[in-house]
Amino acid sequence: MKTVITYGTFDLFHEGHLNLLKRAKALGNRLIVGVTTEQFDVQRGKMNVVDSLMRRLDNVRNSGFADEIIIEEREGQKLEDIQKYNADIFVVGSDWTGKFDYLKEFCEVTYLPRTKNVSSSGIRTLRREIIKLGVVGTGRIAKRTMEELHFVSGITATAVFNPNPKSAKKFAEKFSIGIESSNYEQFLNEVDAVYIASPHETHYDYSRRALIAGKHVLCEKPFVLKETEAKELFEIASETNLVIMEAIKTAYSPGFLNLLAIARSGRIGKIHDIEAAFTKLVPETPKAREYNSICGGAFTELASYSLLPIVKLLGTNYSELSFDCFKNKNGIDIYSKAYFKYENSVATVKTGIGVKSEGQLLISGTNGYILVKSPWWLFKGFEVCYEDPNDNEFFSTPFHGFGMRYEFADFVQNINEASFKNFKLTKSDSIFMAKIMEEFLKKRTNSL
Image 1 (cartoon, rainbow, N blue to C red):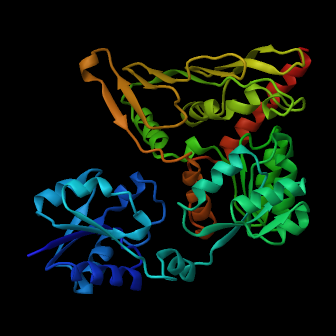
Image 2 (cartoon, one colour; image 1 turned 180 degrees about the vertical axis):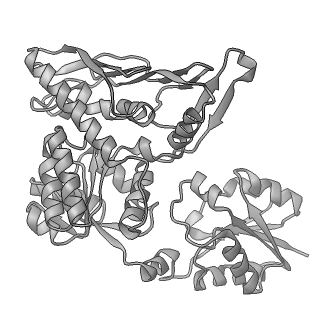
Image 3 (cartoon, rainbow, N blue to C red; image 1 turned 120 degrees about the horizontal axis):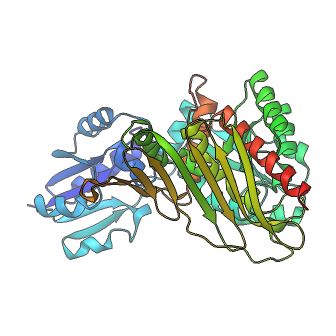
């Protein structure tokens, strides 16, 4: 007797799933099917599970091919299950070819071809119209984002804009995007929403024009550089029932949300101090956007991340704000610090593009502290520390890829569900950060 084992999410059960189970069963006498939990899928970076676990289990059971159904809920379980059930053949779809070759030491591994022209993504599209996304800008962040988009259901990049037609064409060819444009109005006519990853000083204009054209907006950090501009954009979005969001990936990551919950729970007592640092060494070259004469510098480039835990935990009502910075010969800050004073707490933001420092996040309370080691903005884990080190707790959290998939998952949900409340990065949070950017740029200019 041969035992076959296979695994899958089996979301939105379709003909492809049925064919895979049928062919897997034909390879042996007994078929064991592992159905993954939504939590495990999220841990693996998959953001688009629609059906509940119970519904997915029922669909596999009703197929009639599974002799036994198990639940997969953690990394490494496949090998344990192969040994536990004495499986002879491990089966998975051909899009995973090579991924599970390490199991050949324990059983036969077979990759079965997928059923052509059938996918869960296609079925999702039938349930809800897919969002046509236009990408504004073709630089490093835009390229990284393209690698993240396929992990999020319900949205696809269909157009790219750059004032330089050669850059737009090159980007479109690289990522198989059908429409390239150097004309912004024509570009907007082709999409439902825009992702703005252009130079900082262009964010306000591109966002405003997109909203007026009836398009949803996801704009890279810093959102805008003036408080009045941020307020205006949110006002336009509200009046036209459009979504506008600031793309700070850390704000949407599972680990940061977990940290906020623990910090607010009182586990470390009353919070009196937050220190957040983000520095990176950037060579000073003519093409480096970080040294742009209009709005370049360490603070505008990196402070959005370090302001995030401060606004989420201490709020927007600070009583005092001051800055220190070191500048290059062109007046661009290569190292900056911002000091906040609240009624019963203080906070420090440290940023650098020409000075390197430890990039950690430290939240100090009356009963203990929370430490997120460098690079803290790529939120993969944090430690809650107490007076007695034996009581310390470490929390490991997922952070997949470059992290943009988390913000895009929220962007799609905001567009599709009018009742969805985006608490991860709110209107007031983004307006606060725009205000701080404006204050810093004024002080930097006046101190020249």
